[in-house]
Amino acid sequence: MSDFSGLTDWLQRIDTQLDDGQKQALMRRITTRLKQQWSQRIRSQVDPSGAGFIPRKAKGRKFRSKRVKTGAMFTRASRMLKTAYSAHHAEIGFAGRLAQIMAVHQYGQVARPSPTVRPVQYAVRETVGLSSEDEQLIIEEFENFFMNLN
Image 1 (cartoon, rainbow, N blue to C red):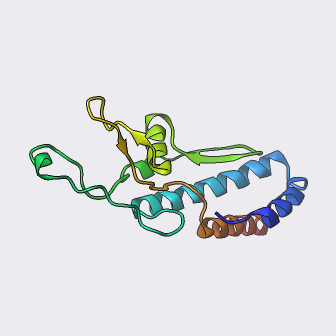
Image 2: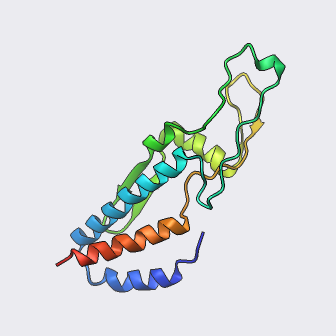
């Protein structure tokens, strides 16, 4: 994740010049575009740094008779990203049970896939986070917003 200190100073100066309605409209535009970008990145199985997700572990012979998922992960999760925004904040993430599942993968935690199975150490698969493309998108949205302000 990059350093946003220069951007933060610039945003504080702008914060005093916009009213709450304008700030909320700007936050909505940014969260909507970031949600689209993150959804595409998750569907592509790529983390914010540009590296691919670690694939699922291959199962041994004893699992052939059971239904075991293989292939791409989080194919539906990208549609379940939630956004929240106001004049003072913007949030993008997951909610409910999916948030718990995604946190296990985001941080590589130990969890039980089902109640009858022993705990498993999951690989780190960073699904949410800001990339350099996201930073550029935010700057572009600010530029577009201020170009169309008047």
